[in-house]
Image 1 (cartoon, rainbow, N blue to C red):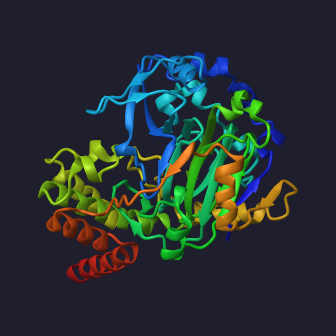
Image 2: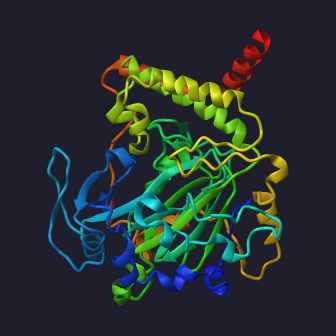
Image 3: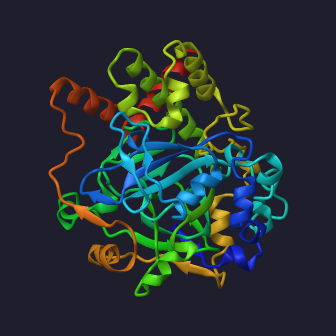
Length: 434
């Protein structure tokens, strides 16, 4: 099963938010009465080999969503100061900005959030209950050209990505592709690649035997289907082509998208593995084997920074290990963890979605693109980065051998195939004790 894109599908089905989410609507309703908006930034001059993760990004807190929007659209040229110790200066000509991975209720009240009605796209089976309050757990992403998410795959669910404004370039690899998987930095259900896919040089491609990826550029109105565990590297871009005046088009200044992870039959077993890994992560942090600020994504800080929560976490692990097929009533704050549903109730699954659109006229097959073509795309056609700097930078190189071995040991224990074995042994030993 491969990813595919439905070109113009959101417009064809007259999805309300395609017309509703105007600039005025965004200003009037986004983050209303929710306080300041914190955004992460990155330098538009990319450094080969350097992967900018969420917890490593510089940040600035805007007083309001409108103030953030003005800066993103280039209507407020004032230089910002980051909240980092370095006090870096940030401006829109040198840095990209990303308000990413935000649960819909972080930015909208329930009345406006409920308008993100996936059932209006007519994608659910007629008898399915999946369309009840289906807007919940939708995730919003708002960025400027250059902003990116490091290459990773999600252990839970399959992904539907709706492009509302602007352009996003996706590089996708099949699940079995070896991209040097790592669980550091740690984020539940995210398996990162330790290779700089977004700016990989031909030398890195050859040394790491990286195959040519499936490449698609999502445009306003497109719906992208990503099957479970497909690797993806995603970047906001400006589609300027040979017309420089297009840079002032709002679609070349702002990228807005929505996505939602829908449950699969494999989520129950993945949930058990993620629980074990989270417990191991907490143990490592408690005993000082790993560093909270260096090894944890911000989305996990609340659940892991309290050193007294081991008992609570142990209860969660036990609950998930004992969990059978059926409704999962544990409300996780992670929108990437879909509710666990009995197989008989799982009418809307990735196989159904794939087959339902098998012969749809809007369906476009995503093709593999050779790396030399991707390099041309970077340099000539799309505003991915202003430039790319070469360096001997090696993120995994540690001066202290002990620290290096700590990281390598955790990465070995948390490797996907090792987690599979650990879970089998864990459950087998528990059954023998009963």
